[in-house]
Image 1 (spheres, rainbow, N blue to C red):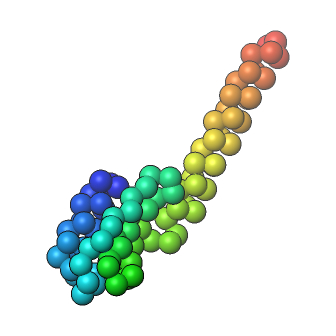
Image 2: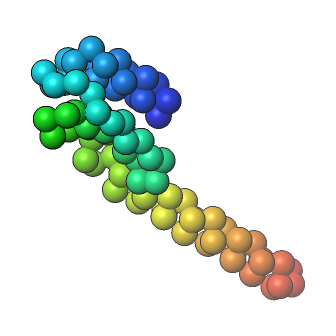
Image 3: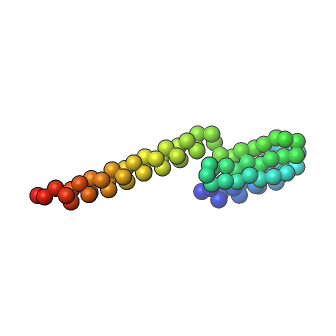
Length: 82
């Protein structure tokens, strides 16, 4: 999905749809998610919504907590004789 967003943003920026100035730089990053066009006049165009990074990190934290809890419960179940 991130690769698709990069391609669409590059297209928008290259065509000048995001600004009247020419494209100077593309900033992309996976952690935190970033896909930003920087134009010569200082204008920036970011494709990644502001709420996405906190959501991704919250989901990763919840997944890590659930995994740790599952491992602990499994180990605990093995110790208690039935």
